Image (cartoon, rainbow, N blue to C red; front, top):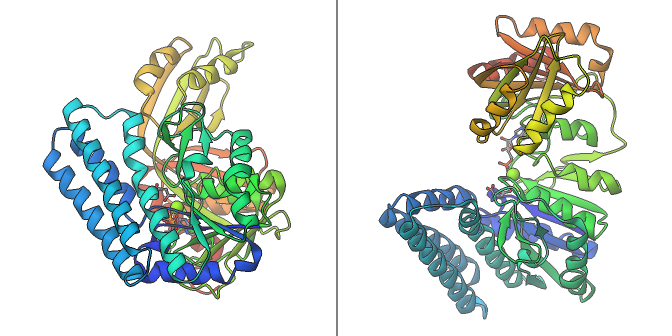
Length: 453
Ligand code: ADP
Ligand code: ASP
Ligand code: MG
């Protein structure tokens, strides 16, 4: 069995969905389970609908719902017209869009969008795409069957970033997916969405979470491989939108891929690796526009390179806690980390000195409540508008030459914090937010050259 996941652009229109069907057909013998994202752009549109409706802009929200309906119906017509499933699928798409419009109305009456209702709104993207793709795959001659992902992806009720419950997912997989595979059918389900254990309320795994859904299902069925089909040739030496000359990495270790994903390589959701690595399931990143390519294989047996890739991310907040009296006292670090844990804010990078600790966080939404608790421990300074660039590779472990090359390549970019991960494969550098791109470009040029080197 394998898991085959298609991202938003890989099912963005009728031609892409047909292409996805032919990729699935070519894997029929490997008993695929298909996970799909929402059609490209739809999740953003849904979140905007939730925002608009809750602010009372019901007309524009409903107009956007109608645009979503039109887009899905247009693709359904293009893919299904003349088939027996056409009328039913179009009716189901319309019924879902009616439900979405009612939800928007309710939000505008309430004037408030809770994380719970935002998850309900955002879930329509994958509800619609999985229905559409299952019907389209059938029309292309595949024995596809639509499965509501909420039956399988059981989570806690931490809305907008729900925590999957692996035992419950394994049990649900046995009940809802394996019988289909045994009967030689191909289950098609939405990524990203789930339901709260024992309650059934709709949840989501966080933005970009369909990759994570794919690997959780892959782990539950002990898949031979998890294939992530996307719009680039694999995992590259940098984001090609920032560094156009970035090159494909043919094989990379789970540890390095995980560092890259955590520090901005959006091609993979950062949580995707964990379920796969536990069982040693290879994760393959492939381009759905060029299925003949070999992509990137993420496995244990990858060659070690001096530097494998550069990643970068924006919108990072740096927090410095200075406490000359307490820093080295027993339990100080524990108290510090407890404050972050209590406020459900995860720390990315840490650096300490004799008298201060610096940490970075991605999600600063809970800082208003967190900072007063932190001030009980010492003097606190908050620096917003920071970003991180990361250099990932085996040679950093040895420090020396590669580290100094990285620093001198940065030239006049100001560095606010520096940290080498415990495994020694990731050098993270905190810079000004607007310096992330140039820093990535300079580091890439230093380690990979500008052209075909
Ligand atoms: P999907 O919709 O298929 O999940 P995403 O947009 O989430 O696709 O991820 C693919 C994008 O990730 C690429 O278009 C690329 O711009 C970006 N990306 C960032 N870093 C990397 C990298 N190191 N390698 C490849 N792609 C990257
Ligand atoms: N559709 C969701 C998002 O845009 C999940 C995903 O694409 O992976 O965040
Ligand atoms: Mg993605």
